[in-house]
Amino acid sequence: MKAVVLAAGEGSRLQPLTNRRPKPMLPVGNKPLLESVIESIAAAGVDEIVLVVGYHRERIQTYFGDGRRWNVDITYAVQEKQLGTGHALLQAEPYIGSD
Image (tube, rainbow, N blue to C red; front, side, top):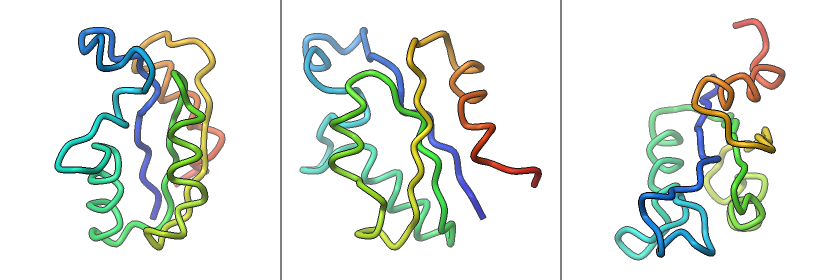
C-alpha cells in the first residue's frame, strides 16, 4: 500500500521559522513534524510513501533519504513551483500506479 504526503509548501504564515527550512521540518517534540507523520504511516502498515516536495526539498530528502530508517520506501515527487494542493497531488500521479 502507498501513501502520498504533501510536503512542498513554503509555510509563509510561519515565517520567520520557515525562512530557511520547509514547514514539515519544523521541530515538534524534538523531531521534525514530518517524521511523526512518517512514523504514523509506517505504524499503520503502509510500506511505500510518495513525498511531494518543493520548497527547500533538499532538507527533507537529506533527512529521510530512502526511508530505510522507518522501514518504508520513500519516493520523491518534485513540485518545482508551488501552484496549490491539487497541483501538488498531480505531481505524485506518475508514482502511484493505477490502484
